[in-house]
Length: 195
Image (cartoon, rainbow, N blue to C red; front, side, top):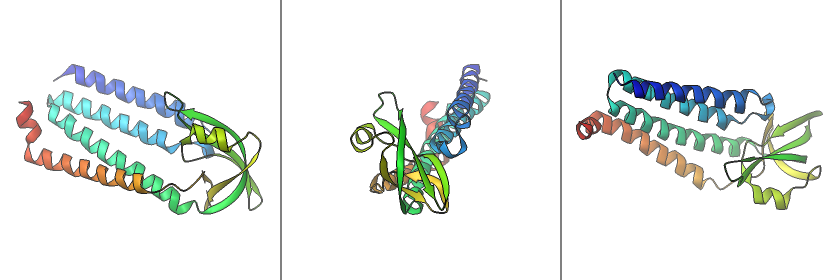
C-alpha cells in the first residue's frame, strides 16, 4: 500500500470539491459554466486513480485511468462545443453587461448578456469563452450586440459559431488517447516498463 498516492488522491478530491463549490454551485443557475463541472469531475477521477493505485500499489492503474480521463475529457469538451454550435441557432439582440476573465493571464473571457426572448427576460453568461481582446473591441457595457441562443433552452447563449475544426480535433485526439489507454493496458506495457 502506498500512502503517498492515497493522500494525494484525497487532496485531488478535496480540490475538486472546492472547484465545484466555488466555480459552479455559487453561480446562478443560468450563469453556470458547465466546463467547471467537467474540470471538477476530471480532478475527482484523477484522485480516484491515485487512491486505487495507492491501495493496489500499482502505478500502471494510475496511468491507465489518467489516460482514460484525459482522452474522454478532451472528447467530452469537443462534443459539448459542437452541440452548442448545433443548438444555438437563433440570432438575437442583447445588451452586453460585463465579462469575467478566465485563465491565469486573462486572455479569455466569458461575457454576460441581458436579452428578451418570447416575452421573458434573461441574464445569461455565454457558454463559450472568447478572446478578451475581442470583447474589448466588439462590446461596450450596456450597449446592444448580437448573440445566438438555443431556442429550446433560451438561457444557453453563445457569441458566435466557431469553425468546428478544433473541436473535431479534440474528439479525435481524445478517442485515440482513450483507445490507446485500453490497448496499452490490455497489452500490459505499463506493468512491464514500470517493473
